Amino acid sequence: MPIHTTALIFSPALLNYVGRFAPSPTGPLHAGSVVAALASWLDARAHNGQWLVRIEDVDTPRCVAGVDQVILQQLSALGLHADAPVVWQSQRQKLYENALQTLMDKAWVYPCGCSRKDIEEAHALRGAQRERHTLAVYPGTCRDGLNGKAARAWRLNVAAVMRDLALHEPIQWHDRRLGEQTQDVLHEVGDFVLKRADGLWAYQLAVVVDDAAQGVTHVVRGEDLTDNTARQIVLQKALGVNTPHYLHTPLVLGANGEKLSKQNGAASIDVSDPLATLNAAALALGLPTARDVTVQEALQQWTTDYARHLNNKHKA
Image (cartoon, rainbow, N blue to C red; front, side):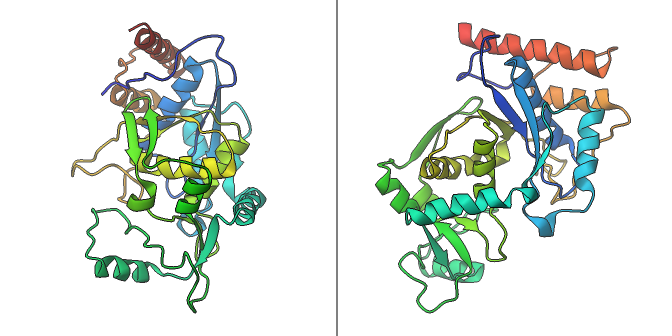
């Protein structure tokens, strides 16, 4: 399935392109991870930009010791080298604290005492249905006070942010492959967590803060993360930082039709034959198979093909 791009134009003069690949060290890279890694690397190279690698290890209970180094070794074996030193989210706690304090100062966050069970029960009482693999929409139980509960987490008051910044629901944004996207964050997600009940920083806050701090201008990641984008845009607006351009890559599915993921035991990639691994990822991106070439020659050819595709889309 080819990547369709419309928002960005390849140009040697395009300045300040910064992309990133941000794996979580919960397991080695699998075939789906490599699709996202290759796409983000090619997008940066085709735009003469910078490609960063960030280890997203804030969810420490799920992280596996040593896997961060395994991932970096796998990327190196595939010829995908970062243009700046790798950063680890676990070393950036102060940035997240400062961001939460900024939101506190504007009265855009509040403490929440609800457990997941509380939210599910409130959801059931309203007769609401939710789709498989999705969380129940937070009903705003603690928005106006804890009502005797102990504070467990911090949530963004989406309605307050939308009102004070004159933002309009639904949030609209353009995906360079999927096209126009919309989501009513308040009613489809609710006030989302920024700091968890276990004291760890939530993915949404860490990602937005890090992308802004690293000057990321273009996010290329798997399609399974598309649903996070509208929330991140709301948070970007609240923190007064720029919204990157987004492109979500095709998912790689297993034999059971489910997307490959570390959670469902997807096999680690085989770096003993890096060209074969890269060819599989290139196929998912609609790029030609590279034969009888080195890894570096294949990457160069795919960069040329990718850049040509961007130019052709612009001319069309």
